[in-house]
Amino acid sequence: MNKVLHIITGLGAGGAQSCLLSIIKNKSCNIQHSVISLGRGNIYKERIKSHADTYYECPIDINSKLFFQIFRLYKIIKYSSPDIIQTWLYHSDLIVTLIYIFLKNKPKLVWNIRCSDMAGRYDRGKNFILLKILSLLSFLPNKIIYNSKAGILSHEIRGYKKSKSILIYNGVNTKTFQKIDKKKYKNKLGINNKITLFGLIARNDPIKGHLDFLKAISIVPDCHGIIVGSGITKSNEILDQIRDLNIKSKISLFEQKENIETIIPSLDFLVSASYSEGFPTVIAEAMSSEVPVIATNVGDTELLLGGLGFITSPQNYLDLSKKMVLSQEMSQIKIEKLGKDLRTRIINNFSSEIMTNKYHNLYISLCSDTSSKT
Image 1 (tube, rainbow, N blue to C red):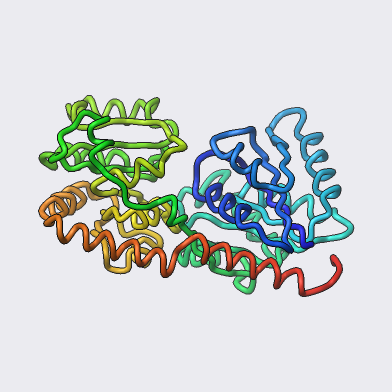
Image 2: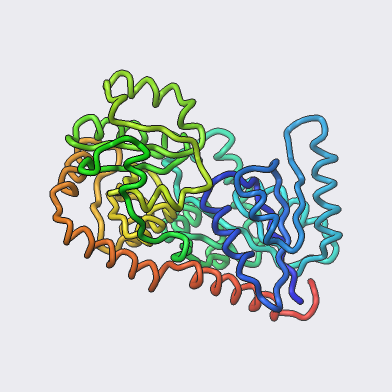
């Protein structure tokens, strides 16, 4: 039995957490998956915990107990005796790699990179130092998994070892994300079925372009917009923008919910207004749900859509609003045809089965390199 130990920064809502869940749900007769969360329980905790063979919570906080927290993590890793350690997200990469240096019996080490250039936010301050340290340590992992071509390019430019790079796109559970009746959700929101429902699904972060979306909603006629994401309802910037644009009746805000698989398929169109992306999982989820997409041309978005969506310029709400109006002018027949084509593209190229099989094959390949740990 090959043992893979996944160590992730936290279990809040995000593409990394969703990807991890898909991997450990894909039970293999010769792979055992254990998970350590370096944060406290969150939206994915119970689901991850229920599918992992072993689950540990080992919060790492910058305080007087930091040394003891890291030592506890070291003890758990040593006790687990994994064949492979897979780290998820930058802080996990750094903390675990520093521990890895002191392990006597070294398992295979795999990093997992989930973003691209983050709109330059890693070019200065603490974030710059973090990536610089990781680039210097990037000779240590056996493989560095990226979920986008944009991510590979931006990290290799920063000094990450090219020989370690491997590309595995995110995958979508096409059974979870599929077409449903949109009328129920519109009725729940109290809007007329003839009104176009645009949705932006993203955490509260300037990089996600919420303000551009709100400006576009203020211009586009006969529409209603929803924003779903952690921290959205408490964002003063978003609330102030809604007030200044006088669009309170045209917008609904929701915190991140576990039933996102019912919200996305209920949209007429998904909007992604991000300034930067790696592989935007939410777009793939919309495609699987037969929901057409209007998205900024960042990261691997255009590659993912494969010519089947509305592409707009980032940080340009006027261009975004024009594409939204164009989408409203589509006939229902064309929308349904586009939706089916989008779903077919996901099934053939970006399904969770395809993704998990690639991870599985990587684990088997790494474990077969040697019969014992180095």
